[in-house]
Structure formats: C-alpha cells, structure tokens
Image (cartoon, rainbow, N blue to C red; front, side, top):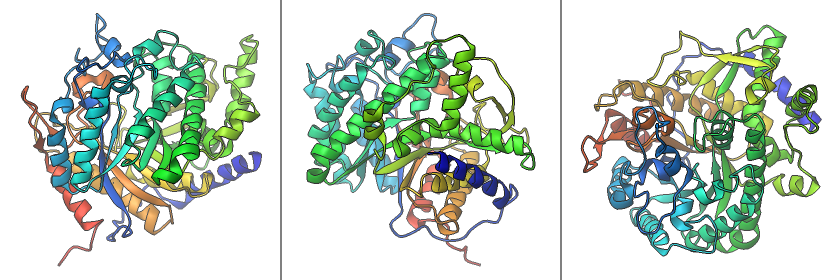
Length: 494
C-alpha cells in the first residue's frame, strides 16, 4: 500500500509536467475497432410512475414530497419523462442515435417494495424485462446499474446506509436482479457515484435523505463498499460462469489541478484532493483499504476532536479480502476540473479533513450549472492518473456531459463543443497514452429530473415541452450520431 501511494505521488508530479494546459492540438484519428458508445439514465430521473403497479416509496419520493420542497424549482420525479409508460420511445431514440449500449438503473423499490426479498413485485420485474428485451431486439446491449441513489424508504427508516444491516438487504436485491435479468444482462454496475450518495445525502444534506453529519458520510461509504463487495462476490461465485457477464462499480471524480504546479505544497494538496475523492472508494476495491493519507489525517483530526474512535471506520481482514480485487471493470463519471491549494482546516468532515481548498478558474468556459466548467485537458489527466494508480484497469466512461445554457430549445452548440473536446482528449488518452478505455457513455439521453436542481439542470440531448413527453432531438444528438458512426474523428476531406 505505501509503495503504491508513493508511486501515485510521483505520477501526479509527472502528469502536471507532461500535459500542458494549452495542449489544444486536435487529434484526427479513430477509436479502436472494439470501442463502444452509449447513453445513460437513472431510474428516478426518468421513469416516473412513482407509486404505480406496486412500487414502494424510496428516499427521493419522500425527499421531494417534503414541504417546503428542498428542490430548486419545487419539482419531483413523480412523472419525470414517464419512461415507465414510454420506454419504447426511449429505445427508438437510442436506435436512431446508433448506440452500442444503454446504461440504465433499476429501481430497487419497484422490484422489492420494502427493500427486502420478502415481497417481489412481479409487475416491476415485468417492466424491466420488457425494456431489456426491447433493447436486445434493436441490437442495443443493456448495461444495468443496481443502485443509482434511490434507497427504499423502509430501509432509510431504520438508518439507511449508515446502518450495517443494509448490506445484506443489498446482497439480496442483487441476487434477485442477477437471477431475473442476468441471462440477458452481461454488464453490471453495483453503485453509481457512492461519493454523492454519502457526502451529499448524509454529509451535506442537500440530497436525499437530507442528513448533515461529518460521521454518517463515512459510515455510509463504509457500508456501501461492503455492499459492493458482497454483490460482486455473489456474482463471481454463483452467476458469472453460467451467465458470462462482468461486474464493476462506477466512481465519480473530477480532475484536481495544483494552482501552482511548481509549488510542491500545491502539488501535494492536489494529489490529496484526488485521492480523497477517487481513492476513498477505489483504493478499497483495488487494494483492500482506504488510502493511507485519509487514515492519517482523519485519525489525527478525530483524536484532536476528543473522539474515542476515528470518524473513518476500519476494515477487518475479512472485509479487506472481500473488497480487494472486487472488480471486472472500473466505471468513471467525469464532468469538470478544479484548482487546488493547501489549507489547514479544522471543520470536521470530508472537505475539512483533507486540508485543501478548491475552486474553478473564471477563464474556463461556464455551463448552466455553477459547478461545471469546461476543462477538456483535465479529463485526459484524470484518465492517465487512473491508468498508473490502479495498473491500467479496464475502464468504462459511464457518464460525461454538459449542462445546457439553452434548456428550452434544440440549439445546444455548447454541448457539442464539450462532447467534441472531451472525447478528443479521451482519444488522446487511448491512442497516445495507452489508457485501457473501452466504452464512452454520454449523459444524458433526454430531459430528466436533475436531483436537487429539479428540471433546471439541462444535461440532456433530447427534450420535451408538453405533458405527452414527446422526445425532441437537439443538435448534439446529430453530432453524437455522427461521432458514434465514425467511431472518432476521421481527417476532414479537403
């Protein structure tokens, strides 16, 4: 472990020196022949039918129904895109864009209304069977995420993710999914963006279930990782050989660039930031334990706060063994980059624990979301950091996208520019740097409920304007259709 972390430090310095921020040369080449393209969505954001046909309540149902609403525009996902009734339109969109695969998530409470295997909702099973069959009939591979943030409310009522009992319920849910769908689904993702689940849901309180605690975010992460390990080992032990699929986890991460790359303290702070973000979840999956920098800092800060135990839990030998190597591929969600400076902090919690401060340059092009600025070169740096840190694992980019400044129309040139420049930097990472990336997934297929931002997030390539939810393609859909068909950027004809 210590050797690996020291290597990471050297790699970070090398990356900061190797790729200049003004590396703007466009690469006119194709992706490898076996590269695949797709779109992604999440069940709560698109399905609607929040209480239809036996579905149980989940934490986002409860959260968005609170008065006053915690959502920016007071909207909910009760109907959203109504994909529960209009899924065939979604399949048509995917087919018309020429995708190889479609990444979507299952609603845990639609299949198991109370979160446990005591009651299986056959109508929920039927819905996903129809969607999976329709995708396959149209030549589109289903890629399924087991958990995209919508915990059954009955499990939250007894403590949610910080309560260790949830891990065995998740294993039971995974067994149901593998059993009913695994004959056709060959790509499984256990969790999407556990950082957001735990930090924004249990640390900051801005997402469901709306809890603010410097301790519960770490407890949440600990149990999510254990749940992932059980679900992965279950698939490996009982389903992988007969079904012929693979299972991984998706971890979100921006790139963290030192404000002054010539200042060792800034470089160290940036390395700390990316390790606290990506390494928090990936180090246990790849190496069996949390990064040593997290252990050292959080243990020391917990002690100084007078706590009897560290806010960061520990894995015993059993769980370390279960976690170590629990991946067939690594999923990555990436959107933007931040600048980092060191700062001694005393505020307890994930941000204060790492002794850094991050911000974004005003020179970077903005989007409609305050947190998302366009920094394509940061994508390439992150892909290379992952390559060397974890030994160049099989990597699927499972989300990447732009928040539209023209949410009410089809002219989304900003999104086209974003996709072009980010995918070109991914192409450089593959063809020039040797990164082992085999899939790219654009976020998102269509209008959706963008969590705390409601319907104001605008991260989609199709939109609707009336209650019938017709899907209208934006300009970016045409761009992606050509990108997918060309499999990259062939040299333009003179």
